Image 1 (cartoon, one colour):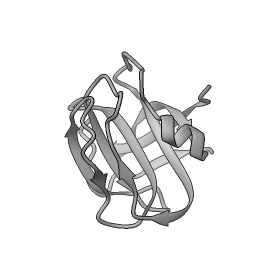
Image 2 (spheres, rainbow, N blue to C red):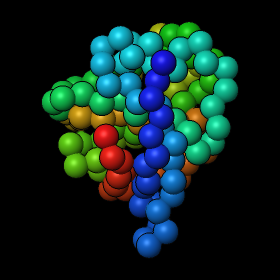
Image 3 (cartoon, helix red, strand yellow):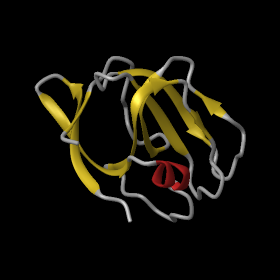
Image 4 (cartoon, rainbow, N blue to C red):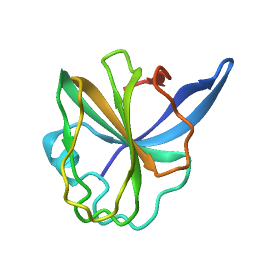
Length: 122
């Protein structure tokens, strides 16, 4: 069971976009992620949280829809984007930089860019 929180991201100045994110904040939840889920609303996603910043690895095993992955530093700023990870693909997706958070959203539905900042109350 994943807790869901409300967050915002500053895509346009003075007009933050609301997001409803499932929280994966322990090893069991991070390992399961969005596997076996059949659908996700366009303003929903999953935020993966760690205590420290490290290179992070992902794959799409048992994930039924394509995703965009947004890699965020400890300040919640997007520093790297991986677009259109393919459903069921077990190829390793590895961050180039050390990150503390990874945000997964439906592929192609968000216009997030490097430098956008996610704000959540964890």
